[in-house]
Image 1 (tube, one colour):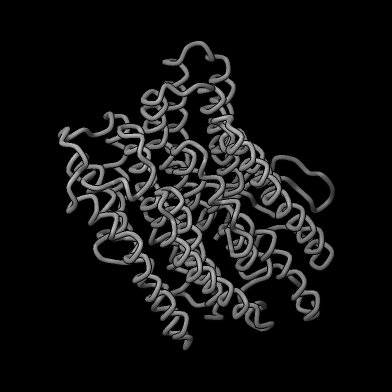
Image 2 (image 1 turned 90 degrees about the horizontal axis):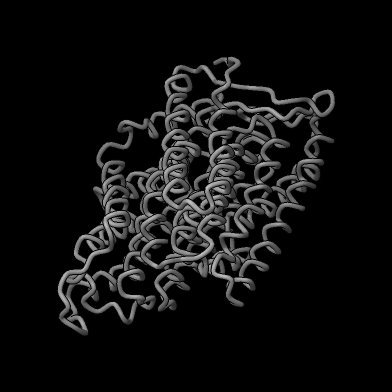
Length: 495
């Protein structure tokens, strides 16, 4: 496996920075502003996808931006784990761009230039942290993502959204400070910040040093990963427009947290070291508690987006649990669930937004018969809920099967049981929505009334991806193969 110098990693970041500037310049020209958004999204995905073949062949595009001091660089390197995350984010930016245009037009929203510009900046930072070659570069893009998302959370400008934005910053910037301490401590122990499969810490590191470092990373990334009790910013942030909730709170921001744990556990501390100090058990217990409690809290939410938010809290900890089990099946499942949860959850948020645009309904108790009025939207909703419950042939079944298999194969059946119970809980809080939508009579008989095509087509696309990734896990994007290769690199013979 080798790296080669390439401009492609930085090009994938720059394309949305250029879009950011152009969107601001086209403030008074909405058609041009929207065209720039679409062109940038497609271009970004094309650049990211062009690197998949190199990574599958074991050739990693890389680029050193500049050196801050000897041994401390800002640098990019595209590996299997990074391109999985970048491919997901760039793919879903395309459909979210079309959906956002339909959503904003449908509600005649104000501050659209700021909205689309902030979106572009967020996607630029997401790709940057996905392709970061070391902790310093990762941290830079990680914090830019936090700041860039704030205008999106507070987009509506209401007292509720301003309060949610302050809470969002308070939680995530606190996590960022703790993460910075972890990075400094890592450099003191190891003398390097470069990611390396299996970890970078020296063999002589003491138990106390490793335990402190693990705790700092777990808490630092735990805020964005929404591990209970660090999660409450996420439900509060649901006051943001639905496209924000869909991409940034189902894919980019929260997945940055779990992806950070991928880097910390697999490429900084290392699975073998973490297993030696018993850190896996701590992570697994915290993840299991989060899965169960968040699922139970979801039952209590009548607001549709809040129920989706608590479901996200639970499913993020599926990934954390997979990382904690330190087995090849579990890690495969965790990496795939980053993707599978993304396409399924974005489908649900898209459906929630479509319902709001057409009916202005937000509460589940008001959705009687909505499936008869919006059959395509609610059919997509049904597909995604089946997947989140772990039912075939939807994508969630594949990643959940691997996670459960990893738990049982590793002799920790209790965590496999937690995942199985979670599937039942998912069915418990999602399927009544489907029943209410299709089998209860609507309050009026206005006939079918789907959302505009710019919203409905993205819903159909993401629901289709949820099925595609379930029926053909490798498919045209090679997510399954990339995950297997990432695990193979990490294993190094220890699994």
